[in-house]
Length: 92
Image 1 (cartoon, rainbow, N blue to C red):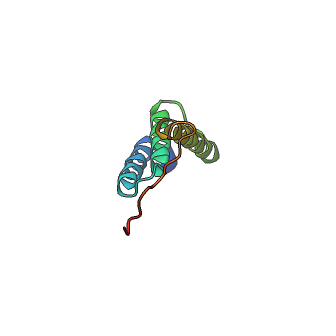
Image 2: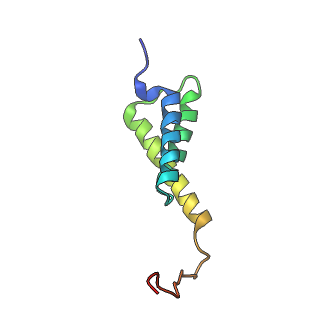
Image 3: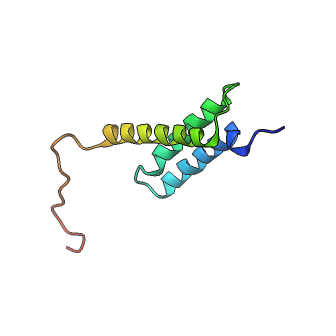
């Protein structure tokens, strides 16, 4: 019997690639965390013998995506106490 499609590791990596491309088209570090989470989930599924149920797999994906997003936010954030200020208007 074949595994369910959500246990196919290359589908998760293809989804990570699609989310990475979507991040390039719509920048903002929103889809990048999900892309990293999907990529790590795909790598985890490539390990033989690992076959979690769908709810567990989605929890793993959500947790990895959240951790990736928090790391990205910390790395690319403005220095502490600094605020972005605009001194001119686009219409000037």
